[in-house]
Length: 347
Ligand code: HAM
Image (cartoon, rainbow, N blue to C red; front, side, top):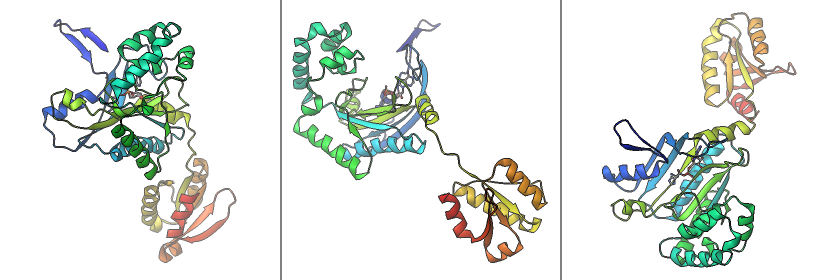
């Protein structure tokens, strides 16, 4: 964490993430459950900066409190997936795992520790410390030799109590219901220690070593640990800088420009209304407001690189039609207004 002493000799720590602060806010304000919240803001971590890893970065996070159903896990995971898709990030993989609960984890830790202890002298120094403090974190080690040693290590998802196993199956069913693609990554344990049951991460191969676009999971014990009543919770946060890197790495097909041409000033108002309508449908549309002459308007369309011109004359306005000119072939045809939108959106 980013900790320093301020001028008043107070020890100050900048927040490294939003989840505990949101949980505190829930309790301090006695918010009614179930409750769903989001936040956007700068976070600070004192780590070694590199591409995609900064000491100050922005997170966008969502948290859901008071709902235990695996359908909520699936809804939250799907929300992140759809958000990345809406940014045009097509290579985002949703990886999921279950890290168990306070019932099943102790026995699993014993099993994992025994496995690690048998091979202790072959693991790196850091992994030996992890084995004592939090054996799950050994799965996070970047050393290839340690990863190879973990090939046959017991996995949490194979050592769940019946309730956790049922929950994990429910999460997968929920994702299938929502047609959200996912993969099970049984080595993914997440860097934070408060998770129970579902843990997940959004991974992109296009942004380098820091490949996690976002991550989250259930933290069913945090509210209680902070002094509240038993309250299931789940959420995730995504890194805005990494989302921007991934969006920039994904080629976006350029939207074709459409120019609206008014044959006379009488058709100008209808042209402006059509421009608005086209834009509302996601069509990249423009108009030359300065030129009255039709030839000048066509020249502006050409200079701007327009693919089509939508021409409005007296006849067209009267009939509720438009003339669509293909600027590549020069071909022109009359269409009904309804047909125009579907043709341009399809193109
Ligand atoms: P986290 O995995 O530590 O989880 O961070 C979430 C995301 O923040 C990462 O996937 C990454 O995109 C971004 N991020 C983290 N550190 C950096 C950094 N140094 N530079 C740039 N981006 C970074 C959490 O913070 C949890 N609070 C998520 C959560 C919400 N769990 C439950 N609710």
